Amino acid sequence: MPVKPPVTDLPIKVAESGFYRGFTKDVAITGKLLVGGLILWAIAFPDQAASVLGSLNTIILATFNYWYVYVMAFFVILCFALALWPTAGKLRLGHDDDRPEFSNFSWFSMMFGAGIGIGMLTFATAEPMYHWGANPATITGELEGSTAGNVREAYIWSFTHWGLAAWASYAIVGLALGFFAYRRGLPLTIRSALTPLFGEKLSGPIGHVVDIVAVVATVLGVSQTLGFGVEQFLSGLSRIGFGDWLFTTTADGSQTSSTLGIIFALAVIMGASTLSALSGVGKGIKWLSNINMGLSFFVLIFFLIFGSTFFGLQALFVGMWDYLVSIPGNIFTVWVGSSTEAIVASLPATVQSLPAEDLTAMVEAAKSPWGTLASFTEGLPASAAALPAGDIAATYAAATENRLSGWQGAWTIFYWAWWIAFAPFVGVFLARISKGRTIREYVLGALIIPAIMCFVWFAMVGGTAIDLELSGVADGAIQGAGQSDQLFAMLAVILSEGLAYVMSILIVILLLTYLVTSADSAVLIINTINAAGDEGPKARPHILFWGAALAFVVGGLIIAGGLGAIQTAMVIGALPFSLVMVLMGLSLIKAIWKDGQRLKHGLETTHVEPTSAPDATPAE
Image (tube, rainbow, N blue to C red; front, side, top):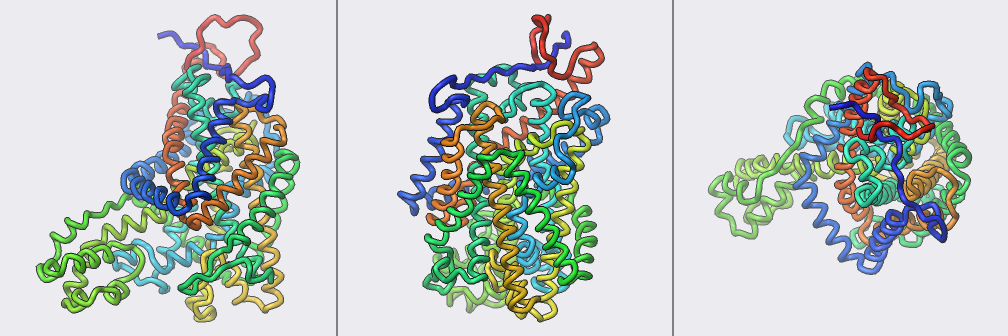
């Protein structure tokens, strides 16, 4: 079979006049209709939306858990394989004489701020604290939660969720887009990365579907991130004295964000981000990214000096070692629970003889990953509580795999779906700012360095929180605070009231810059995909629409069902894009391998402006 040149032209029809001038109407209008429909549904029928989304989420987590785990493992392996593959590693995202547009500091700042900044402010404290209390080792009874012996396990899972897998998913999308946009001269849009598999068919309906899936996933993935940020932003505003109107108190005494508070936060965030998006990536976004990176380093240095430095450094280095050792096992592990019937069949006869209603309640409680044997025993119906302690323990042990499966679905699978849904946004952005870098340089920069930075944050910030609780200094003040408030609670423990107030203001400003950076970048990315990869300035109405759409998705879903509603919508939206990402990885492998063959036959592998009609039919 003769070796043919690559596809270097992918015509995508865009409107030549009217409101959608420069946009692919099939993609732009369909995306708006889908997102608009979700917004109207969540606002008009909040209970129904929450119920339906929750049911779909349960089905997906139970059916596609293997898929999510193995897909993320594939991304990690592929990234390192491409960096180590001599033929691939030296290739540039562009022509051989292209060089990076941005300095290393600005490149890293924009990449990090858009990629994980918001979530890290929330989870650098909250996640190590949570896993310190409960993780697979405590579920199986190997370790006791909230003890010194459980710190290492807490960091294994924190680093697993925020380490190489997260950044590999972003890196694959950015690498594929950069490769085909800057080496092949194709549009900077998701469909271009699949040309080795589908060729010029991507100019039509297949390509439209791919881009629509990417737009919806981006909206939902960014909404999840903004949702966490909004909750923490409101907690910060409350800490610095903005008033009780930001929250409402429920019947059980817990606090939730008030509707007025959510609207206020979104108005501030999306208003600022829309103004930044109107200025473009080279101005507003770059300026904000450099600010939040500078503030991030200041906060990190603060914790290095005033936090539990020795404890944090120990958590960092021991945690990184434990994490690396755990990768082969954790990255492929999938826990699958048994049915209620199967569990009942394995129980002692005394347990099986309970009334059907009590037996079912007992088994369902044993399957829940939240709690311990003691809390399980305390919550049993009277007939079950009268059973011998050994039978109660046997029932709890029989559902161990179910608890592990539930924990994995709520944490690991959720994270894998979140990173996948966030990947089209971060990937397009990474490609946009990475032109001229080699594949090896790109992988090292986009995969390893940000992961290490996350590890440092989690170790120093989360480590300080754990140490304060272990030593008794915090006396439960941090562990008892809500997820979005734990960072501020920790500042209140380690600083005087005045200094804690000043640092809280600084954290609120830092959080706001991260929120604005992510939101304005998302608006620009969505419009780039809708415009067939055109990175040029867009008409104000389209920027304003997507800014408002993000605000309404976040606000509508939070009001409908809290952060859980955004989470379920995001997991659903991530599933189809995960397939697109796998195809992108396969496309990269095929394209690079084919390029090696082309070079042997003296054929061009990069886009060259044609001076005459080509002699061969383009095909990967």
